[in-house]
Image (tube, rainbow, N blue to C red; front, side):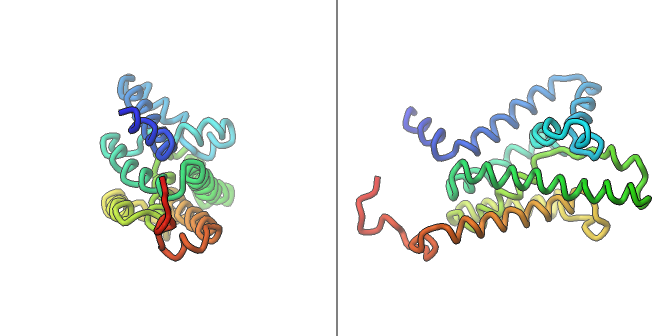
Length: 218
C-alpha cells in the first residue's frame, strides 16, 4: 500500500490532484441548495463579463465545476489524464492542460467579445455560462493519443468518442459556438505542446525502442 501511494504521488501527481479536486468541488457543490449552486456556476463561468472582473478565479474554478452530468465527468477525466500523466510526467501535463484551458477560453470568449462589440451578438452573450473541465480533458486526450501507451491510447480514444458523439463538443463550430471554438483551440494547443515534447525527447524514445533494453533499469 505504501508503494502504491508513492507511485500515485510521483507518477500520477497531476492526474490524482485534478481528479481529487474535481470530486471535492462536485461533492461540495451538490450539497448546496439549487440557488447557491447556480450562483457558484455563474461566478465560476469564464464568460466575457467574468473574465473582465475576476479572470484568475473564473479560469481556475471553472475547470472544476461540472458542465453537464457530474457523474460522468470523473470517469472521463480518469480515462484521459492518468495515461497522459504517465506518458509525459506531472509537470508537463499540468502545463499542457492549463494552456489548453486558458488559451481555449481566451480565444473562444475573445471571439464572443468581438462579435458583441461589432453588433453581431446580443449583449447578453457577455454572460454565457461556460464551465467544465472539458478543455483540460481534451488536452490530456491529445497527449495520451500521441505519446501514451497502447492502453492509454485506447482509453483516450474512447473518451474522445464519448465527448464528440454524446457531448457534441465540436457542434456549432461553423457558427463559432463558444464551446466548439474552445475545444478546437485546446486540441490545437495540446498538439503543438505534444510536438515540442516529442522533438525534445531522445531519439531512442522517438523511435519507440525500450531505453531499458539490455540495461538494468529500476
